[in-house]
Length: 124
Ligand SMILES: [Zn+2]
Ligand SMILES: [Zn+2]
Image 1: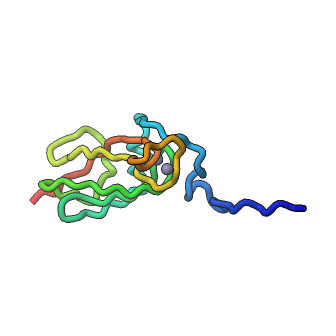
Image 2: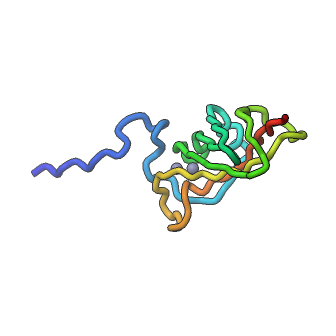
């Protein structure tokens, strides 16, 4: 008697949907994370910060991170990650994907990866 096939969670493109549950939760950062993350990053300025929509460089899940800081306006440019100058704000980012990663504490999100990017501040 054939067993029913288990439902496929990620039947298609693994680079888009992430590796299913294989990656354990771990709080790590690597020097290459920011450059990888800012490639294709979408930044939507909000009233007091920005919504950063990108791909986690560690688990490759889509992660939507809301950054808020009342005094700073985020400009829609994060590509230049050279030296920080005036008007450049370091923004700490955490992976907050909704994929299950084994070992994740109940009150945490994402895979545990974190990194910093630089956002240019809007000057007026
Ligand atoms: Zn991640
Ligand atoms: Zn993930």
